[in-house]
Image (cartoon, rainbow, N blue to C red; front, top):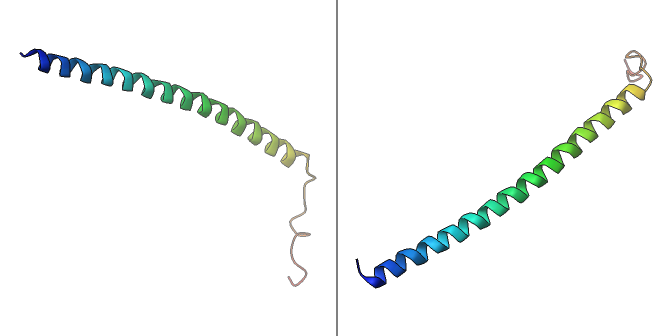
Length: 68
């Protein structure tokens, strides 16, 4: 194997290692953002449930429009 070919292979390997590290950083940041968003969704669901429970129970007959 020639010296030039070996240098080319080493360069490609170094580039791929760098790319893998960059992709890993992106995935790590995305996972952190996803975790935050999941927590926020859980909090919003809890608030919606609490608001629903705080509302007085409505009478379905009273909710009908006057023309019924």
